[in-house]
Length: 166
Ligand SMILES: [Zn+2]
Image 1: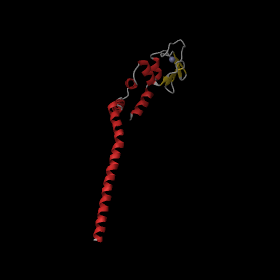
Image 2: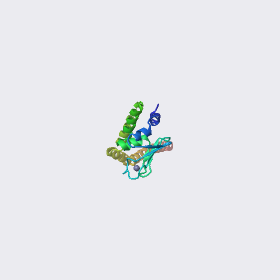
Image 3: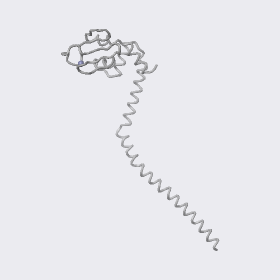
Image 4: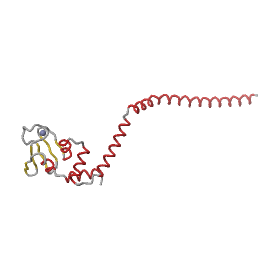
């Protein structure tokens, strides 16, 4: 089971009706629920609609919405990983994969940070500046060598000619 499977299982197991219904009073109509949106001042009534089939929610006044993870992030002011872990514990899902994914993401972010560090960018700039110089030196060195070879060839030819003449 990979991280994506873990996430899918998590979203399937979490009851979005309970998750949101624990915090705001929801009224159910068939396959949807509605209640006052906790993310704006609630003078517009039951503007938050929860779709129990799609397992998502949306407020038609402040135009925000998402799945159970998005609700957790907004309501409890957690970041994405914290929300996933919190919901994972709630749903009784083995969060090992999620932790592994978090470690990988952190390693990747660290690598990105290193690659974007000013020292490395400066080093890369120096390399880019040095490259034409190195190419130029290389070009001259190759040509010097060739000229030597040509010169040596000419010497040999002239010696042979001289010898024959003599
Ligand atoms: Zn709202």
